[in-house]
Amino acid sequence: MSVVAGLVLAAGGGRRYGMPKALVEYEGSLLVERAVRTARAVCDPVLVVLGARAVDVWRTADLDGATVLANRDWETGMASSLRTGLDGLRGWPGRVDAALVTLVDMPGMTPEALRVLAAHAAPDALAVATYDGVRGHPVLLGREHWAGVAETATGDEGARRYLAAHGVTEVDCTGLADPVDLDVPPGGVASAP
Image (tube, rainbow, N blue to C red; front, side, top):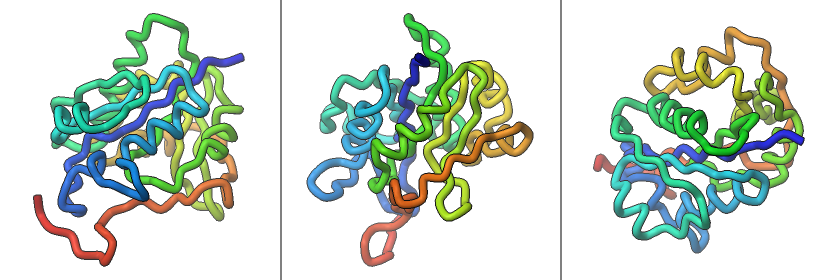
């Protein structure tokens, strides 16, 4: 059986939202707490990458046994968080075959969607969730692809360029999770931080 690590990307400053999304309360818990709980229901280990106001997040959030990684370059975009997380997994003391990458700002993500993707885990796996035929998250990255993903990730694109250049298994998660991310606060008005 493959060992699947959860990798929660939660470092952004939430410029459009008006604050770091890791610190946003949603239905009684912080978004970062929800994302970690969801990942822990399926993955072991779980790593969470923090950046903007990392100390506040670390002190405030119940990260439920997740390993916290600090992304000092968080302002350069999601790619730096992905690289930080993959670097952390490469140095992980135990065997990890694949990383299941999730985003902090998707409160509708479910363990069911993660389980469906995790079923494809292998060192050479590349899989992405689809919702009504549209690619979304989570994304499953087998260990053999980590170096290539880290090398090609730039800005806010993350693994997109690498995935476009390689054969990817699309896994239908329609109805298993809500793929909508929270870009602006309820009411649609965002303020600059």
